[in-house]
Length: 285
Image: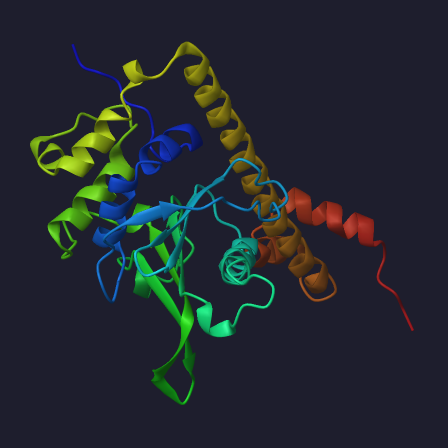
């Protein structure tokens, strides 16, 4: 009998997995472009960053520091909007500011890594269709190698990661495969996933049987809320596109016939005719 597995990207499951320091440590070492390996982790309280309107359920985070004091803010982001860039800037800056107690010297500040695991695509440029890791640093424009240390951002686009094309180290591939595939309707962990003990432990923590009825109910409610968020975002995008096409059509009303405007704007002929009726007869000087 096959076990069923929950989605590790959902709040309840993500926190259960990455509340284990050994698993989070292995994950960070596998996926981040670090100058030195993480050897130990200590969890820190997570401050509540201001919510992005309409995205209450799509963000999950954990916060910790390593043996050198370097801070990691790790977020699981299910949906993407342009406002999220502002959020990660806020979270990263907050992680720096909160290190400094009254009267403490600035030299005591430790570097911060803001890490986003994104179950969406934000770089839609065809030239970056296979680029799933985006690493941002503060650099001098004239000399890119001149880096202002202290704050780095890493965004991992899960939908772009494919094991067939990746050339990263094996453990990186296993973690990303796990996050992308687990919880899918046909997911069954194969020998490769289970061959690395931390990933195998993470798979174990997604098993349906390991959760109480109350937890499963919370999990399903979270999924429903997330679907609602996605629907709202899609509706907003669709509305924006329609409004943009309507604006193009309005500008063309004095210049072209209805059929030509429909072809240029992408609106239906009936929608163009309605816009012309609303505009009224052309003005004469």
